[in-house]
Image 1: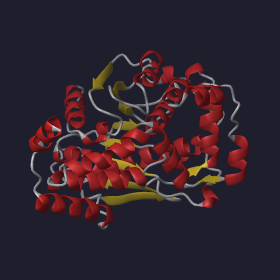
Image 2: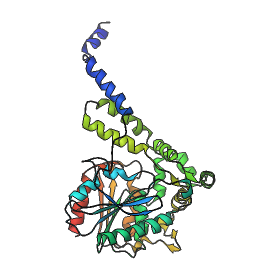
Image 3: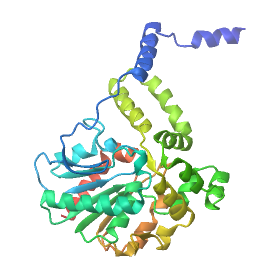
Image 4: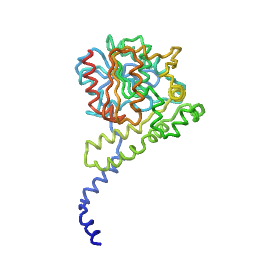
Length: 354
């Protein structure tokens, strides 16, 4: 009894008013209106179907070569322009770069048949041509992130456009490695083609955004729920709460995925591993990554639970680029787009090759 009394006496006294205020803020932020994103000034250069090519003009232009961003297909790209001070695009335009962002938009059911080849040839290649003409530039830097990095590299392997620099953030080239983030039995079933995706695609056509959200939750469940505990502990910090609200909104703001793209990813890129083997065909052309000769920068994340570094490394040996750089950042998959370290490093890397 004496020990219990002593323990109770040693418990720090709670400030009930402060704790009540903290809990109220925790509840309120979960019900607040969505914060505004895409704050950096921009204008439309080109549209195709649901996609938009945005131009972010440099505040004071210092670099002739613009940056063209290709993002993944399952999330909205405002992660690049989340908030003032948390924006890779803002940092680049402030440093004197013209930036172009290819925003895929939100697909409708009529887009269920869009393929990877369609995205690469009809959207990326045409978008780059538009950006070159709009900027009146002789060359371009392409920054591909995650799956966008894979598509940008496939395009670069047959591009006739003048790509000076190819920058890739956490690109999953060896898709079989990606399955390592899944439970062992599930990964084994996928690789052995025991879970066929064809019937799923045939039935659904367009993969709903909520399915993509559930898949993300499945992969990152512990992290997903721990973020609420972190929020509760930081409800006194306005800056943290604002950033948390923006990230929480983005992680839930998925977009539908073309069923044919899902079919290709599962069958051709994961099970058959065609990209690494040099067997992938795009519009009748065999994709040979050794055709890439642009200056190459590959950035990986040490704590990436979505795209392990091993999935990105093959590109270093597959390209013919004489100038190749591999840089690892101590962050997670999403941290690559939020930290100022990546734009800082990219800016330095680009200036050295100007």
